[in-house]
Every structure is written in C-alpha cells, then in structure tokens.
Length: 327
Image 1 (cartoon, helix red, strand yellow):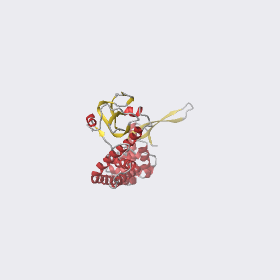
Image 2 (image 1 turned 120 degrees about the vertical axis):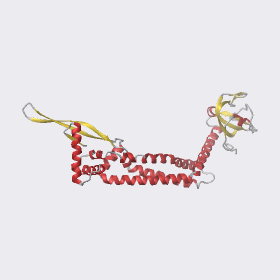
Image 3 (image 1 turned 90 degrees about the vertical axis):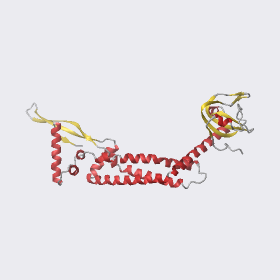
C-alpha cells in the first residue's frame, strides 16, 4: 500500500521544486494519475497550476500556495491549493493525504518548538521558582494586612475587586429646617454622592488569583519534566497537549508580573478610605487605628475613635454638609 506522503517538506522557492530529478514541467495531474504528496509550498511569487481539467488542457491558474505531488508514473508535478480542494473532490485520495500531511507537519513543528523550549529548561524552571517565591512573599504581606483590616472590610474589598469598582464614595447629607402651613417645624433632608477616592491594586485581596497562578506554575514545571521523557515518535495529541502547556510559560510570567506590580499601589492607598467603606462602628474604628498609625499618630481604641471623628468633621466642613453616610 502506498504511503500518503514521503516525509514532510516545505519548499521555499520554485527553483527547489524544478531541481527535483523527477519533476516535469507542465505535467498534468488528475484524480486517476495522482499517487501521493511529496511536499507543500507557499511562495512570494506565482506559479501555474498543472491540474488537468480535461485531456490536454491544464488549469494554469496562477497561485502561490499548493502541493508537490508524485504521479503514478513516478514523475513529479504541482497543483494549486484551491484546485486541490475545489476540483479534486472531497472524497479524493489527495484530500485525505493532505489532511494526514498537515497533521504530521503540525506535529513536527510543535515537537520542534518543544525541543527548543526545553533547551532553556534550567533557566525557565529557575524563573518559575523565583516567581513563586515572590508571589508567596507578596501574598503573605497582603494576608497580614487583611488580618489588620478585619473580615468585614476584606469582604467589601473583594467585592469591589470582583466588580472592578475601586471607587470609595459616601452620601453627603444636608438638613434644612422649615415651618409647614400648620406652623410645625420640620426638617428636610437632601443628599448627594461624594467620591472620596479610588483604591488601587484591589486584585491582591482576591486569593483565587494567587492560587490559580501557583497551579499554573506547577503545571509548567511538570510539563518541562514530561518533555524530557517524550518518546522517539510521540502521538500528535500528546505533542499538542504538551506544547500548549509549555506555551503557558510566557503567560504565567506576564500574569505574575502584573500581580506583583500591584503591590506598591495597594499598600500606597490612602488608609483613611478604608474607614468609609461601611457603617459598622467597630470595624470603622479598627480601620481608623490603621490609618492613624500610618499617619504616625499613636494611641489606642479611644484615640482612634476621636481621630476618626475629627476626620469626619473636617470632611463635613469641606463639603458644607451636616452628615456623612456610608453604605
């Protein structure tokens, strides 16, 4: 039984084909005399298709992509990619051979890429280990700060991060007293949203981002080890799966760098903003203690209460309102 193709070869110029000993110029190819593929080509210049539309008449359509084929008499010719697909018919041997050829070509290309990647195995694995260590250090620092803030505040920050909504806003309220038609004194309330600022780097409180990156780092490391154990002729599915996993290296490096780049912004946030995320007094005083210490003001819980009250008074005066309400 004839093999569907002789190796895999991509010709880079028409001259390479013309130089084949069995090549015959304007050699007709049809379903009856086609035998198997020799290679493929994708030129910058056009060549003429040798598909035989009827006895004695060649297609001669100019094209840049196509196939080099061996005929039943042992001679070699070319056929354009379009004619091979549109005129040979979907049930032809050439179409079946083309599919097998393309699969093998892809397998070899991906296998070559794998071998190239594992040449830098030690460097790549060292980078993965370094990235994991950096992320662990950052994760620990974020965890310590989250413990200071408390569960309630962290949950709000996680929700803000999930919704990509970093803005901290409050409702500024004004009251106006008036006398109604019956002579009774009443108070009218009006409010408006006031933006206090935006918190940077909130993705750092999303624990899932760290765990996902650790899993990806582990898989890239395992893929490098598995690449060393590839057999002489691994299956295409095995090559594709392994190549895809190795290709994740660049993605993991970028994703890790993006997470690390959030550190300065997150820890450089104005700590006072954390005090205006919710109404719970205990949690607010806890955040006020953090903000107070970062402002180099010493003191305990009572001092934090008074300090926060001063901050709210200053904010109300600045906005010209009577009260500040949090969500």
